[in-house]
Picture 1 (spheres, one colour):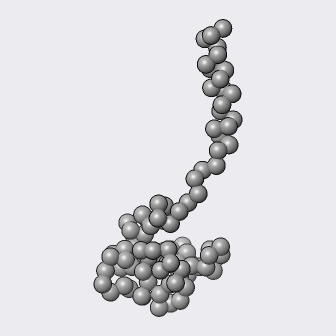
Picture 2 (tube, helix red, strand yellow):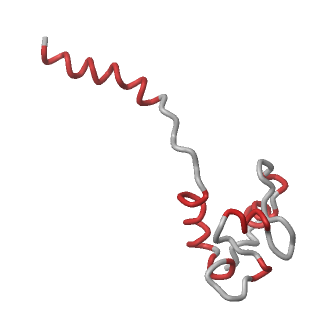
Picture 3 (cartoon, one colour):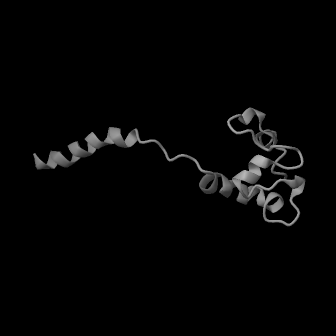
Length: 93
């Protein structure tokens, strides 16, 4: 009977484990790392930001650059950054 107690307990816990929501995405933890790997050479770690766009901080990303706002919060279809990445224009190369 004891042999069945542990597997039964673990099986009972599975539904609660599978319904746990994944952690919410954050700019610092999830997004910034992608920008650092692919964009900072031109839009971050440089004295002259191309297009005036700085992707190092969330507030800079929202402010945008010379072409205007780079993202529209809650409206990815209206976001210039999403459009440029989706068309393959960015990142270059």
